[in-house]
Length: 173
Image (cartoon, rainbow, N blue to C red; front, side):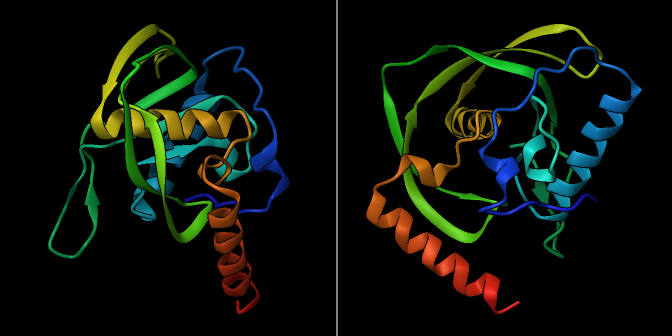
């Protein structure tokens, strides 16, 4: 399980670098990212959130939680150099949270569907059509690769309230 970086860590505001080659080091990092995401009960995690400025994301929107509140593997996706190649005109609004903005949530408007082109765990080119939670998750995680947090997509007033709450909880640790 890797260390999670939280707002306002500088790595979260940087544009992540393209992964040149999918090798064992990259796969190891993807595995560690997945473990970290499950440990924190997240549905998605981008490499910058663990301090690595590379264009890599892990997502699992099909997890089951057992009676102890632990999440079990559903259908994990490993996306390397993901890129949104199509967005629906239809928009949806939903509450989002982020492991890098702990214990905070806000309504964010996103595209209802997106199509993403990416390289998978084995270095193969793939495409996926995201709908519902997967669509929101893809957009949220891909934003991280461009140094954008969900709080950058909400009103300034709401953002300031969240940042204020965040700095209170961070200073009490």
